[in-house]
Image (cartoon, rainbow, N blue to C red; front, side, top):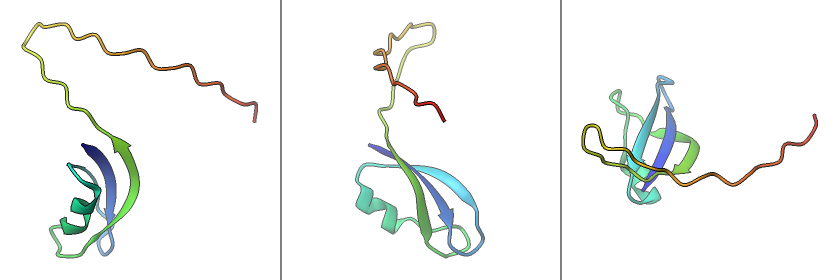
Length: 68
């Protein structure tokens, strides 16, 4: 699943959508009727838990930052 940040090509409304396939982004349209322009794409994995259930997420790998 993918989380895609898009902006409308006409009214400039910015939203995030979740799609199974990146080709599905082309089928999405803004409420004003115009298409979207993709700003960012991220892999998305939904996590479902019962109320009060603790979920342990995997640790992120260390990312070295360069001096500016």
